[in-house]
Length: 278
Image (tube, rainbow, N blue to C red):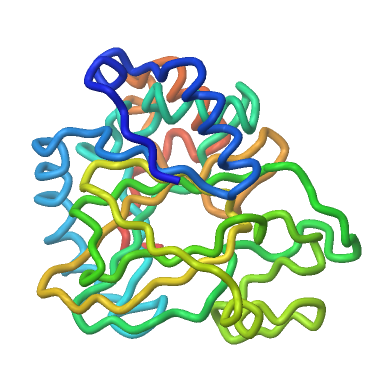
């Protein structure tokens, strides 16, 4: 579902109460919500200007890692990426708090970029089973937030998603199949061929919030420019993602209170880690 915000909602950083309830319901029931064009064009241009040369250097040093001409790249915790409006946008946080509770934490600070010439990924979810011996659907415990730095169109490799319940299969059916793994309890790639899917088309500066268990894949970028998403992951207090963001102490101390709370379990007091150092 795509939700259009009013200028007042964007300016005040607060959704109409009923729209907030609807957004939370959509993630619970359908797996995701799109908030169209929350950020301004100027901020997206600033992020692109900082991101593009860094990504080029990363590819030169490390290469592609999530498929043909497609890469996941961790972001350094520095401006303009570390701005509080990215880490704790009030509208995004109102939805995240409604799903994870007010003591969630931010544990992943990265990006995904399909370049021109990229191909399809295998259908997958972004997580392996939390309790692989259970066949019981579990409540939301981990959310991915994406911010596209350019308009996402049919041509430039939009994310394709399988909404309406793929995130609510029992744990035995969840699997990260990107590397060619076949889960004996649910052949995700085969099943997806016969199921309804949607491509997430949206403006630069939108916000996507989705359950990490939702089935999805990247599609081919047939345009002449990269399509970059900033990718953040928010978890319930007890769950960790396996990554740690390195944040200099002086930078951490300058952050707003909510940002410090979200980043409280990361590597505070360590130098900024550049993408090619991972």
